[in-house]
Length: 220
Ligand code: DX5
Ligand code: ZN
Image (cartoon, rainbow, N blue to C red):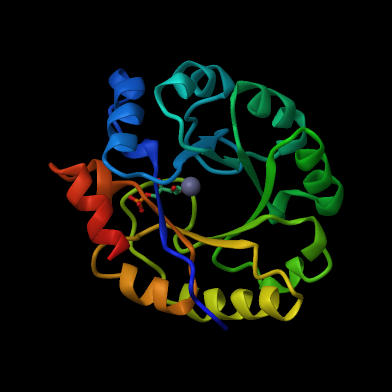
């Protein structure tokens, strides 16, 4: 399990000031963010409603970093085109709501974006086994999705290791493992050690006074 690649930080704009979202995206990119993580919630798959493609399109010009769109919605297939058109570079869907997951992932790629699969804390990694060819990123939820500022669920750690191993054994060392929820200066080192490539961080970046120090602190 060679872990030579650099850890990337994806600040979640869910924790940013929605009244100044464009400037938050601009400033966090200047502060060293590697990706911009966008949490899309439909009030159905998860209780809150957040933002849609119109907002992604509006803030897209404020950064040249990839937009990492996390769809916490029950019918992701209905919205793939709109998010890619709005400027999503990575579109991640939840395995729990995709009865034809392989087809959904192929569709995302055919639109020109990278295809991600997210797993809720209780969802076993086995769902990935037969879609390994179609996946570009795996997003492991380390909280139950829906809210920022929750506590990291430790059972995510063996899951990160298991998924990294599954990918490497399949010859998919190129697939990024991303971890979302409860990432902070205390939890980041063990998450990275377990094999994560990308750390999503809402509170641990936007909740801090110095975003640059927050981003580089998580990376280190
Ligand atoms: C949770 C979202 C996360 C959230 C993380 O449903 O998917 O991206 O913003 O927030 P923190 O980093 O505060 O746990
Ligand atoms: Zn997220």
